[in-house]
Image 1 (cartoon, rainbow, N blue to C red):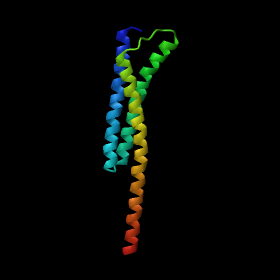
Image 2: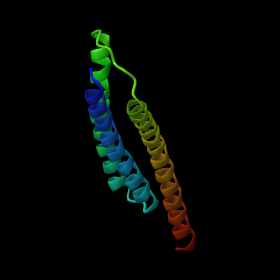
Image 3: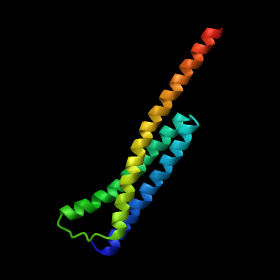
Length: 119
């Protein structure tokens, strides 16, 4: 695999992981607004983008496993870093979603209890 081909794959990884990162940040915004349906949708679409990035990465691994020499380029290192940090950010967002929903449930439970006490 030549340098130009490696760069194309690296930019494909960066593109899709960047799209995923944007969607994860949108999901965080929706969580703060307590719009959990939209945040779930954003997280699902972000996963689709990560799968596309991972597919590009997997092609490199297949080529390497087939005996093709893959020269490590700085842009490829950057792409791998971008992908892994975005995957980690998405995992954290999923956990945050659970926490936001739990807080919402507790607040709703407290509101219901208050209404029962005063009603």
